[in-house]
Image (tube, rainbow, N blue to C red; front, side, top):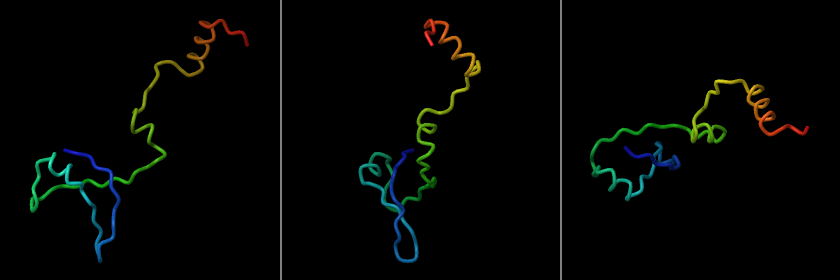
Length: 76
């Protein structure tokens, strides 16, 4: 399976996508073969979440900040 970032383009009364030749060659598919395409709209707001996922801390943010202050000898 490969993931390709491309733009949806209008072709007559339909829409289509262009798959770069190198990706077709790397995937092993050939012209005329049936493939499955999963469409997902890029959400630029969730880029960091998508790249790094979500992390659930076992401690609350307040408790983590207090521990950091204690370790650094908070001068504030």
